[in-house]
Amino acid sequence: MFGGSGVSGFWVPQNDRTPEPSNDRTFFNDTGMIDIDPQEIRRILVREVSWVGDAILTLPALEALDRLFPQAEITVLANGWVSGLFAGHPAVDAILAYRTEDLHRGIRGRVRLARELSSDGFDLAVVFPNSLDAALIPWLARIPRRVGYPTDGRRFLLTHPVPLQTAPAGRHQVERSLDIVRALGGDGGPSLRLPVTPEARESGERLLRDHGVDPADPCVALNPGSIYGSAKRWPVERFAAVADGLVDQRGARILLIGSAGERPILEQVAAGMRRPAVNLGGRTDLSALVGLLERVRLLLANDTGAMHIAAAIGTPVLAVFGPTDAEATGPLGGGARIVREPVPCSPCLLRECPIDHRCMTRVTVDRVLQHAMDLFDSPPNPQSPIPTPPAAFLDRDGTIIEDLGYLGDPAKIRFIPGAVEALRALLRAGFRLVLVTNQAGVARGLISEADVRRVNDGLAALLAEAGIPLDGIYVCPHHPEYGPPEYRRDCDCRKPKPGMIQQAVRDLGLEPARSVVIGDHVSDAALARAFPGMRGIMLRTGHGAEQWQKIQNGELARPEHVADDLRAAVEWFLAQAGGRDVVGSHPA
Image (cartoon, rainbow, N blue to C red; front, side, top):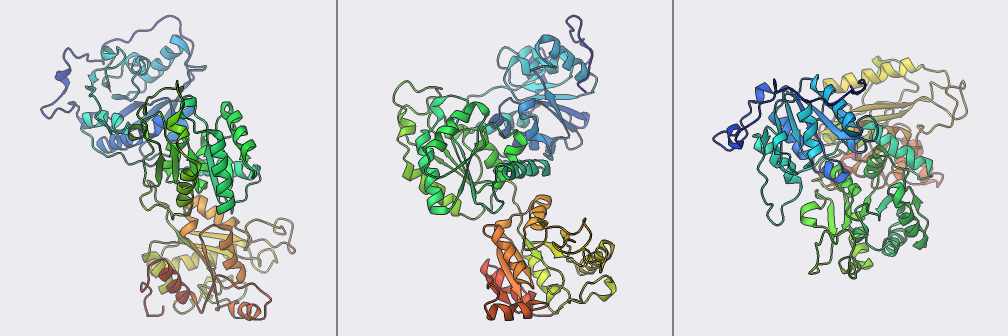
């Protein structure tokens, strides 16, 4: 869309599509709402705000807009550095990058953009920012309905100016954009959800891998900077002290995050620590930052954009507030906590403190560390904006079906007694069902990958007939010592290595900390050790009887729990999770 030609001269929109109001009330109905027929709106342009944290706080308004105009296509126009936040969001159909640094720089660039937008047939423009420039583009593009606040001398650019009311004390900034949509007749509360795309997850995990961070490490991210100014920054030596405390008392792996300009601050934190930390300053683009923040156990931050991202994806957040108003701009979400010291001069909203920075220096290390450890230890918050479901990661042969060797014929599938009912109990308890199976017979040449697929498809079909869908099937066909080169490898997917579960977590958006892995080998149960909070259970079915004898003889390490069969394992696990008596007594 942005590949237009150069501009020769100043272009002014014609008035054939643009009704300009002579009186604000002309365009409001008897209920006080803007009088726009939703059926007439097919394409909506949303001009987004320019800062990461502010953009996060418009997400509820986007969802409300989508509900109000379900038939309309919503296109977001956002500055390049925040446009990635809207990727994958269910309310957004298209994203346009507003490139003020090159293509859309100056008046020529803005006219170029407006010309291109004018040909796209937008029926409505919703302008969230308060600047003159934000309203100018839709006006130049001749979008016939333009809604926003009449601030910054731009009333004449809006066909439907929304009256700007004085916000009462304690009202959150998220309500500002929601009020614009409410004026159109929309509804909605301030709950946030920021979807994490597979690309963001992969970017975050690749960044951690490149810096030697193990997937099993319980990571805590520290964001000690702030672009706004030094007044918002809790002292770096205190960040360092809390980080050391989390390493000493919780075994945390510390990640330091921030922009390239904040790297000196991160280096000061690292230098002040007794323990090593991974300095990622300037190395996280927006996609990698989102993926990384989903991965960590906790974010400790000042009032920053990263704080809002973490809260919106459900990661526990501990934010230190001083000069800014936590009631107006604090993180939203049940997993967020704010630490602040009430002093008479706060909130002052100043960038630099003219006195002694008392709002920050009176926040002690011990106080922040205690809150951090509480959040680190807490289970995932059930009120998180995007709940991530737990899963049961299940071996196949000897766990769900009889182990008949290298099975290549789906007609020979035989369920172990009680297995189907156990799977149904897991499903009722809210667990996703994921098959993770080593099939080294492929590498050994005893069966083909096609054989494995036929058996897995047959198993999935039988379970589906019983009302038990499998959410994913993951297979490792490799062996470290046998087979042709394409199969003879020391791979990351062969159990007990965690590759298959890691892939399932990425693909399906699962929560490892509340999940369980079950199989008939010690190596199945050992998989759980790679994921903090995951439970591991070995069965005595299949190869489990032989494995149990080796455990008794001291040849193998005992898993967390050993059960007679899948039904007994599920009964024990759900009882531990508070779901006792959900497994039926009738064998499958």
